[in-house]
Image (cartoon, rainbow, N blue to C red; front, side, top):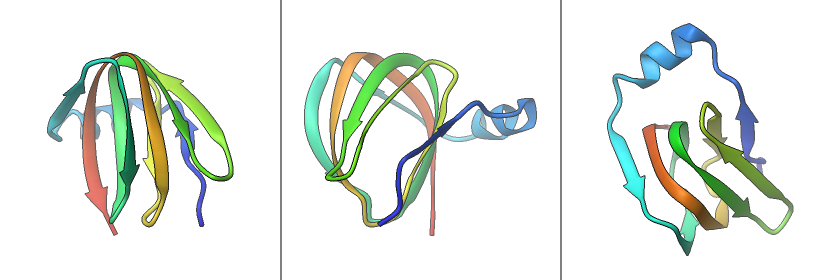
Length: 88
């Protein structure tokens, strides 16, 4: 199983991500499973994601990739707004 990847995107990547839809979520906690790989770019918020193998925290300005097949728990600490896209 792959790991959650958190990094700072390039200006080109940010421009490309801004073409994608926006998802928002108020502070909450929920379980999630990824049927496809998701890449997102956070415009607002702070999140901790817990998997069987790791805990990852990310926030404004981070680009995050969740691998296909990943099961995790999202803990949204501050309201999230993110651009997102799905791939294989």
